[in-house]
Image (cartoon, rainbow, N blue to C red; front, top):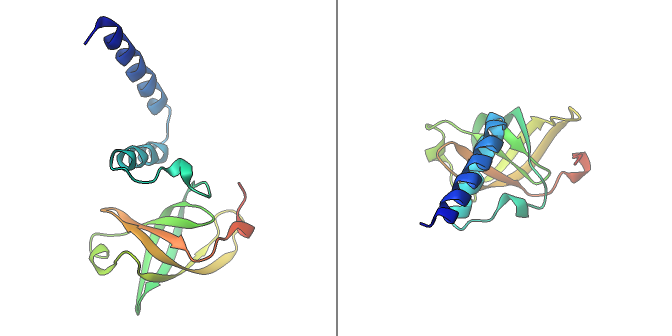
Length: 139
């Protein structure tokens, strides 16, 4: 590589490192997920209809006739990501219909909503609500 490209690469890497150092663990996790998705050609988070907020809330959900509990680590008006144990993940499939109950992290209202599993990874499940809860969501 030329010296100019080496200098530019070094400057960009330094700036990225500085930005990442100031991020919380959740922000770093989100950035890593976004970069991995981008590399794999998946939809970017920036294209989401509703922004995500990082919360840790308890969620009970049913899939079929089984009841599960987990912790949602991010949340939006249209869905959430729920951490799931390695023992639970094999029992779930993309497209499974869920009934979810949780306390809204902002207004503390009890919510019962349906949704479906939109994605599964090694850490948990991404759930898309059947209807947006935008009425309960502040930007």
